[in-house]
Image (cartoon, rainbow, N blue to C red; front, side, top):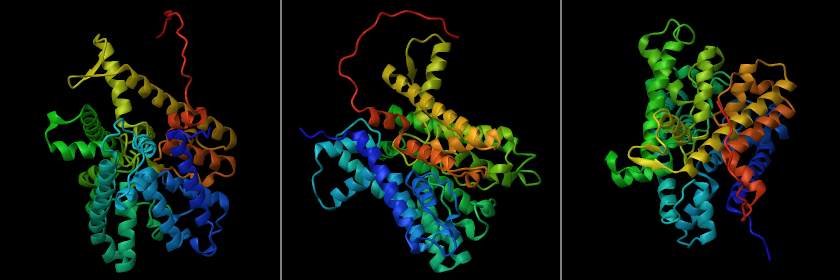
Length: 443
């Protein structure tokens, strides 16, 4: 009997196939500018970064790739951000064809939901909502880029950066000003900053939160627990990050700047590590404390079923709720009048432990190969595994094994490290042996 691939295996292999196809297209002679010296390693790394919506790059996007190459990256970003199963489901809807149960279950796994009912309708909402937000973002950015770059390039830059921001990809074309400069030249531009922050945040909230808000409006009490946790955590991280970055960078990247400008930069610094990858201040110039806080934000990332990476806001929130409940003597993990299941708590701890461990293992490997500052390597590894794309500049100093380690981290981050492990192991054994319980001393 022919054995079917599991749903997680389809997702894992689907992203791998997309990366390889993208690398092949980027290797075409007309995909890169003359003298760019593009080889397979650079093409594979770039395709991995785009497909996994990360943004780390070995070569500057604007000066290395032609219009065709940039378009390839944009398609990879869009598919990688939405998930290839979402795109496939949308085409099923457009052609008015029914989707089989097996494909529906794969779609459920792809967007990280537990309800198979209404999955086709949700896919339509995801795709149309994405195009709507990206279109609005492009219109807003065009008011800045068309006057600066002209109609053709201005429209292209507006569309490219709107999609890149919404998909939390971190790719930009601002290398035309200075290679790898990101949005540093626009650090004092409210229109660009606010538009990008809104796109990043909406993309990182997650498709399930969109659906809940559409259904319930602004009635907080009617929201599902998932939506409440996502919104509360997102707002808390934004406010906390803005305040802390504002004070931490007073004598560093904020030195000599007005209070208003420092607030704008702090707001952007609180949003972009989760997990957009843009920057309006020089990341390498951040204070060590700000760098550590950025790593923490990169690890947290966005929310489940979104375009963002990281261990997800709900994962960290559930663990913190469990710790707080334990301190006050509650036997159950409860919040907002609801109890969180032990299975959800176990999964949250597993996801966090997996990502932290993978980041540390990669850090040790790269430290053993290259003589680079430890904090910069930690920053790079957690930027990759959490599909952020921010860098202190060491990406371009990597070669050989280091490049493939970072590329593999980006792949794991997008597919999901735990998902990837399950894909390799296949189905778990049906029979599980129950052993006697025995207490051990901890703490």
